[in-house]
Image 1 (cartoon, rainbow, N blue to C red):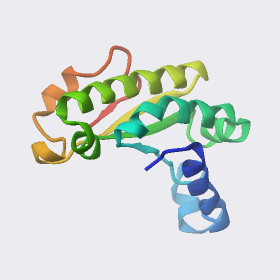
Image 2 (image 1 turned 180 degrees about the vertical axis):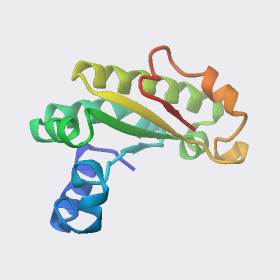
Image 3 (image 1 turned 120 degrees about the vertical axis):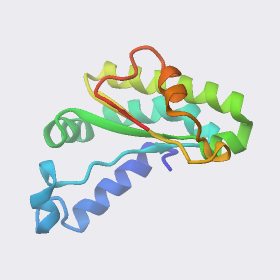
Image 4 (image 1 turned 45 degrees about the vertical axis):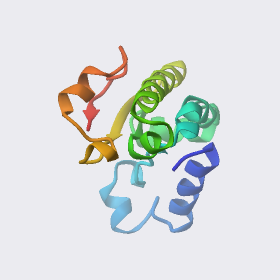
Length: 150
């Protein structure tokens, strides 16, 4: 899970240290030579800080240029349903997920970055599952820029 920008930057550093970014099969198979890192925000605390984490990441020139150059200016962000539902109950979790999505989209727009929100919904109701059409209908306006992944 991503509680801080450093959680995402650590994964980027591991790719670099493992030389995945410039060599081997991965370097040839991935656009830009690196795996796309999608921060996961799942606990209520992390959902409340999601926009701040994305803003912090995109305020770092190296990271923003990395996203632009290696991933066509496209950031994926995953929001999880299970932990937030367990932390606060379904109603509060749904509201925090909604607000987090709005904030992440706003943060990416501030920096001219496209975003895809990946919804980590479990199969059962207790893990955030449920009818997909309800998840689609509950998206904040403007949050589906590139695509919807559920």
